[in-house]
Length: 123
Image 1: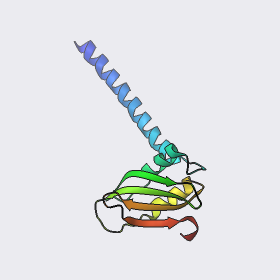
Image 2: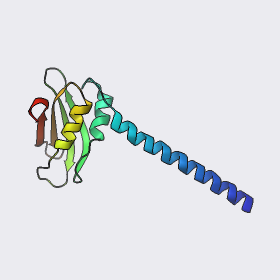
Image 3: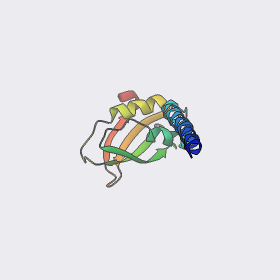
């Protein structure tokens, strides 16, 4: 019985270590995701979901306008506070990671009202 318990605990420990290493690598990968083009939906979605939102803001979805310049990323969020929140840090990071994005706008998903909008050249 002790032999099986020892074997089980060793296996559980090894699997836990593998899981933790895999999770920590994923966090680094999300932060390193970049794209030249706002039209790359999967990368842009991954970038938008990993931005450093304030505590009372939760990412919901995106909408991309890439037909005419300036290209715009509309980010829909759940705003629990229902007040204007400084999203400049999120915008700055998005501009760094999406090269040809000209505008990023944050909207409250519940009522589709604009929370804040930023232009690349007017920050």
